[in-house]
Image: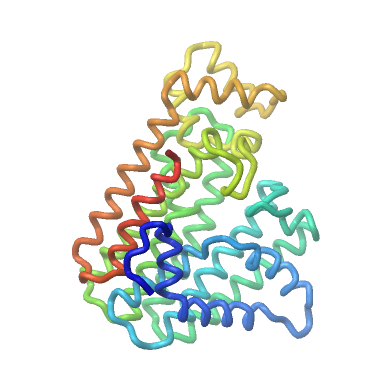
Length: 333
């Protein structure tokens, strides 16, 4: 494989470089999502796991481990663990959000039911903990257990902050760190830990994952109002229809006049939305430059992710991780 493939996106180059490891991860995922007594478990799991997706989180674990010189096999288990945790949270999120589409396909709760989605998500969490225990590393277990708790905490915080127009950017950042960045940070950190990397490198990997996850979520919030539906796996305006207070809306509310604030009160706080309200919401965001401000904030976090890599060894994977942080924000252009 050529090291330089400028026509390939960074996550595609990572996938090519780590293809053998990723094949082992996929085998592990399929083997561990099996159930002898409950065939619905692999049915529901396969619907989401095999729906495509970039497998970005497990790729981060593999890349971090290999970048730090790891030659064993525990990184395969950890990458599968990270993907199981992520899939479990998606199953639960779609129930909470009453979503109908995920990765361009009907959600599991729509095809089966809410009970199946919740219980299969619970099963995947249990499988994830079985896998991480097999590494026999208490530090790895601590990192991933803490991430799992933080993810759940972030989701509950989002519930309490939803529809509250007084929600601050500080609270928004706590939600993002919980629901998205916590697993990015854990995914990269455990790769360094399992490789026995120096503490400075492990901390750098965690900073990279945290900042990358925040930038990733901010871009996702941007795309919900300013992107094209193709390629992001959901409909434009999903966050608006679900009454989520994301960064573009928080910025617009902070600058709102009386009429605009009344609009946000009706559509977000009270949940009364008409067919034309999404268009008006997008116009208000444009008026206050809220989308470009969100992109600017994402760029700052992506810059922090790239800066964190400076203490890591020179390696093609380091270059790919640097490109990935840049690409996460570049995709909104």
